[in-house]
Length: 395
Image (cartoon, rainbow, N blue to C red; front, side, top):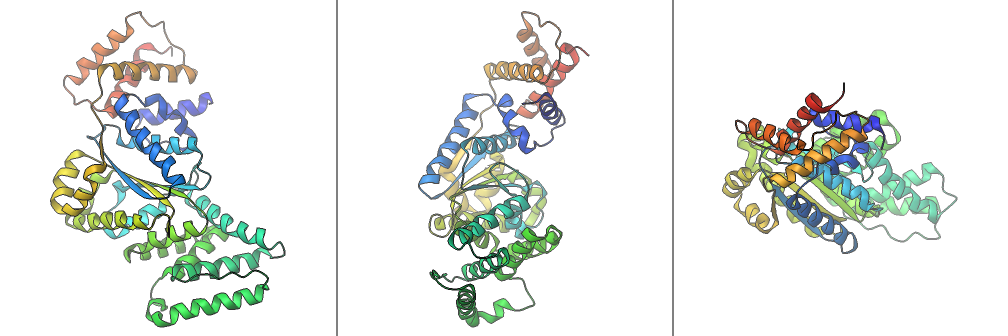
């Protein structure tokens, strides 16, 4: 915990920026309230449970604008790091930038990262290394190029619905011959699906392997994932590959769902249908997919006025999955003030001597300010920071 990283975290808080991987550990400094902690605990327990008993489960976290929904997403990420899922991945999708409902699955895959953070390519490289290590352990004489070739054909068979048979005791050439014949057997009845005019699961395998081997091929990977997203098969292909690579748990965090009302407009219904289909696909967890815990954040108004009216079946499926964020109470504001003061001290800032009644002074200033402004967690943190910096720091 360095003073530099703490100051960067405070700066991000001040200007409402996101947090980098190495700043997630500080999120607890702005985590207050039994209700908030209870929601985090429920999600954390579900993650621990499905890691040992594979299943698909989701939660819908509701709250007003600035109530702490995005903060909750960061908190879950931090808890996942602390749980240290050795066989897990995280997918973080901020739907604030989603304009085309057909790119929902693309948003999920673009948000794929390892439990400890990093980039999409870092996560894809980790996936590849897990697949490669299996072949390295099985046959120490295989070259890296031979391993790459075996991974490619095995994944091609997987994504078209085939099964790779045992190949113990066979030579590399014999194994590849068998894998090719299996792939051809499964694809012959569906040649039109594998034409050169459109991207298919086969193209995803090649784009994935190329991107891992050559960073410059990122645009090819993006193009293929966009196409498969619009064909509504992208997450199915990806989750099957993750299952094949031995991943046991995937944490899917979908934030800012309410922003899609404006961004997607008349196409919102199409997006909600995708949400519903995604939920239904969780039935494959444990057999074709890793266990999946999905967390969706949205306002109560969006859930009530959009989901319930436009897609009643989805609303019914989510009915017993809703966890509501409560308005912050005075004792929780006291805790937040003390935590932020402590954070500034750990960041190396020097304070004037706080008066014995500093909490009363803080609360009076906050009451005066929010008498004319709606109180939200985001605004509250910003206002407390402003009071600390303007009145109590030694500059």
